[in-house]
Structures are given as structure tokens and as C-alpha cells.
Amino acid sequence: MSLPHAILTALLEKPSSGLELTRRFDRSIGYFWPSTHQQIYRELGKLEHAGHIRVLPTARPARGQKKEYEVLPEGRAELTAWVSLSEDPRPVRDPLLLRMRAAAVVGAPGLAGELRRHLVLHGEQLAEYLEIEERDFPPERTTEEDRLRHLVLRGGIDLETFWTGWLSSAIEDLDGPRS
Image (cartoon, rainbow, N blue to C red; front, side, top):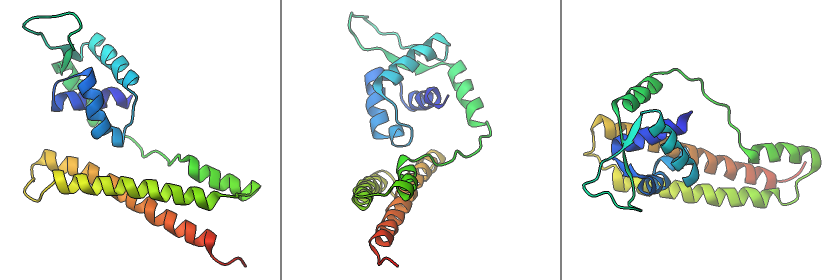
């Protein structure tokens, strides 16, 4: 149920066409709530049908012109109600952890190499998040909206820091002496 709420959030931040919205997802919300362009376009249709968003009127409608969407009061009310809900944390569901558990049963030639590959990927993501933080969150940005957006980014930074530390430790443990 969260993708429609992610779209409402993005459209409240800035009315956008479907294409602009998918590009913005790729640069922000998609870091923690990934979705395909097809999913986004499908949800836009559902949100419009539900009366939560509408296509902005244009001065001269033209065939093939991109539609720009905005959130209606019903959409804002839906998003506000959703934000107020209580939700329990979800358990971690990572295929790498499951593969490591399976490797304990069937063996794992090459597992350390896969862990190293994941370490590189998480390191790259961490570097990207830190670059975004430096660029987009200077100390003078102190509005509540900025603080909340920065907290979301800090969550991503902390998760990537966890993964790089845990993977480094796991690789060291696997490469260590056997008893």
C-alpha cells in the first residue's frame, strides 16, 4: 500500500508528469522504496481514478503532450491518515543472509567473493549518500521539512555503514584461521 503514498508525497513536493516523477523516484524516494516506471504509471491511474490526484489543466491541450499531476484535497487527506497510522517494523528479508544460512548446510565455494562484491556495492551506495548529504544538507538548512528529509537520508547512511562494517567483519571471519 505504500507506493501510492510515496507518489502522493512526491507530487505534494512538486506537481510532475509521470516521466518527471519516475526520474525523481530514481534520485530520491527510489533509494528506499524502489519501483519500476510501469508501477508508477499504473498507480498514477489508480490515484486519479480514486480522486486523489488530477491532471493539471493546460492552456492548449495537444496530442502527445505530457500530463502533469497534482494532489487533490482527498489525496492529501489520505496521505495524512496514512502517516498517522501505527505500523510494526518489518523483519529483514535479505537473500544474501538466506544464502549464507544455506551455505552453512551445503557449502559455499565463492561465498567470500560474493561478500566482497556486496561490500563494494554497499560502499558505493554509502559514498553516494554521503555526497548527497554534503550537497543537499548544509548546516543552515534547519526547517522541519529539511530535518525530516535529512533523517531519512541519515537512516540510509546508517544502514550502509552497518552493511559495510558487517560485511568487512564477515569477510575477515571467513578468511581467518580455521580451527
